[in-house]
Amino acid sequence: MKLAITSQGKDLDAALDPRFGRCQYFIIIDTDTDEYIAAANDSLSAAGGAGIQSAQFLVNQGVDAVVTGRVGPNATRTLQAGGIKVYAATGGTVRDALGKYKAGELEAADETAAASNLESSGTPPELGKSKPGTETVIAIATDGSQVAVHFGRCPEYTLVRTADGRVTERGVIPNPGHEPGFLPRYLHDRGVSCVIAGGMGSKAQQLFAEHQIETVTGINTSVDTAIDLYLSGRLKSRTSLCDHA
Image 1 (cartoon, helix red, strand yellow):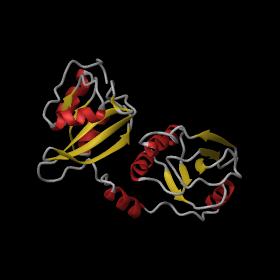
Image 2: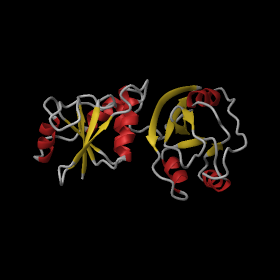
Image 3: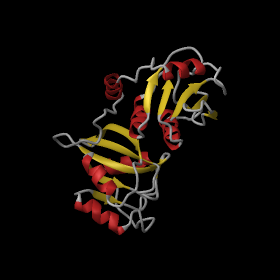
Image 4: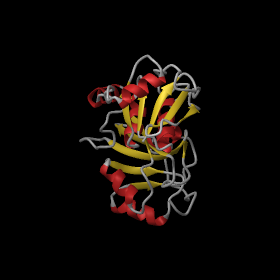
């Protein structure tokens, strides 16, 4: 299996980096052979979203578990969505952390504590599940800070819960996959009532309609601008930027 350990250096004798999103390196180890690579963390100097970007990097690398000091709430959601387990460690070297992991001395991150952190950050674990009243949940196909051109092939989705014309919760989840008919069911189960994207094929729009989900296409702007336009009632569907999604 693949284990990632946040590190301040490029080898097993480097100090463990207690930061996740802004660690200096990820030491990615094959625990069966102890072979490893040192991957520089490109998110180290990111202006924002470093934790999510780092988590998505590990998902893309096929990592099964990560050992670090502390993971923020949004990054935790991304790791969990990617099936990556999180183990907490403090101090020592990467080699020390690896030894403790193999010996079963590291405890998995407390899911209850993680949930508490998420709630306090405004991104609770239940984001996407409708609540009574005037609340709605929208899903925006996201590529970095922009609305993605392809809804089904975007890297991630920004989920936004709104109530009374304002955002009450916001979070980002990685794209769970693009199997035919999957995304309409997946987002419907999360309480989504509107999806926003640059482009979407007619078949996909039909499937969303069957799940009572509105589709708004032809949007070529930032995610933040799209949210503002949606809240003000000025977000209108235009010609799709692609003919498939």
